[in-house]
Amino acid sequence: MDSALLVHRLHFAFTATFHYLFPQLTMGLAPLIVILKTLALRSHDPARVDFYDRAARFWARIFGVSFVVGVVTGIPMEFQFGTNWSHFSRFAGGVIGQTLAMEGLFAFFLESAFLGLFLYGEKRLSRWAHWGAAMAVFLGSWLSGYFIIATDAWMQHPVGFVRAGDGSAQLSSFWALVLNPWAQWQYAHNMSGAGITGAFVMASIGAFYLLSGKHVEYGRLFVKVGVLAGAVFCILQIFPTGDAQGRMVAQNQPVTLAAMEGLFDSAPGAPIVLIGQPNVETGKIDNAISVPNMLSFLTYRRWNATVQGLNAFPKDQWPDNIPLLYFSYHIMVGLGTIFIAVTVVSVFLLWRGKLFSARWMLWILLLSLPFPFIANTAGWMTAELGRQPWLVYGLMRTADGYSKSVSAANGIFTLIGFMGMYTVLAILFLFLVNREIERGPEAQPALAEVVEVS
Image 1 (tube, rainbow, N blue to C red):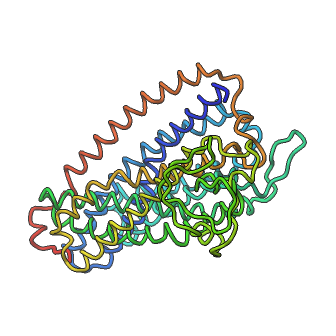
Image 2 (image 1 turned 90 degrees about the vertical axis):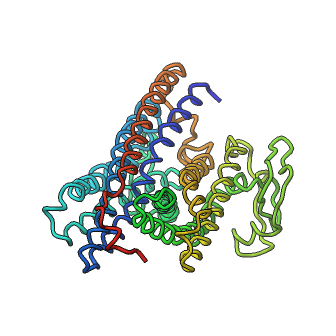
Image 3 (image 1 turned 30 degrees about the horizontal axis):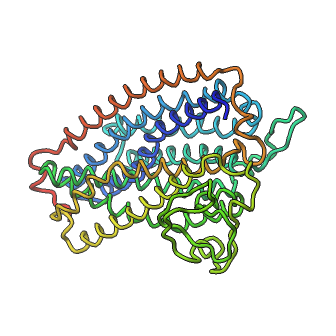
């Protein structure tokens, strides 16, 4: 691989990975804030209304911090298309420019404007209007996510375009672009992943309050809402979104599926590998623990269906880092399985009325906080590594899309600069969020005596 190409790929991978730590949190918290505001709106007890409102304001402040850092880290990615990936921009700009512009002009401004109203306009708005501001923030953040997903989905499964005389892709159908079937399932799968992040963060902070004896009533509320929402999102993550997305990959990118699963040879009744290490040189999985026929059933709903292996495709069409793709996919699936187990046990203990006193389970919830971020990162690595060696699947190879005039040395210089700046941003983010957690939802001293969360 050309050294400049490698640097440009690492550069974008770093900025994109760091950036997405923050949107997944805001998109995950947005529906939970709406739930808290809905609880406040439905209550007729002034003490309970104040309780839920304070809880919503607490998470809105954390949402706001994450939103700001997400904006700051997201803007450079737009410029990278022109600076580091100019050939790609020239080829695909006539198509993806539509969704990127709509994300900025509509969804972003909707989210940011109503976030300001929600944070600073509560005393000037009616209860219903303030709830509406929370709903608008939720819709804006999720609409923003859709336009970004639609952009990536076109790179995975290009539709609604024609080739111009200069070889570039030009949009021929706006509705084909935004209603791309790949985008619909990828979006649903991605947003359920973001929902898991928001739910686990809320439950984790609630567990921290319960274990430390601070803001106990709020801790109970956060744990309860977090584990219930987490259970719902975990179910959606597997079925129907994960199942449908996997079948979409099998239908349109069969070589990607083979690499994800470490399947080198086509076989009827293909097994699914639970544990093992792909050995590209020998074309097999080392130390494999697998379930016979399961991959065939999950992919084609037939136990003896033939699943194409990597050897059915020319090697120049194989993903260029099969081990990393394989492990990214299995980390995502493995963590997703753990999330299901954690939420199922938590919901059971909640139903039995023992969750808030089960310190061992609260410790699990507390320590689980970083793992949804890891799972979402692994999921995006699976999607982007799986598309290789294509930048736009079937149309433009990654090696043809980068800026040939930007040397590897220039790329390394700016990458080091971004690493330094983002380290400062990470420290600032952690400081601000930690300060909000230490302050808590600012409950009044007498509130715990008059408010009981069942």
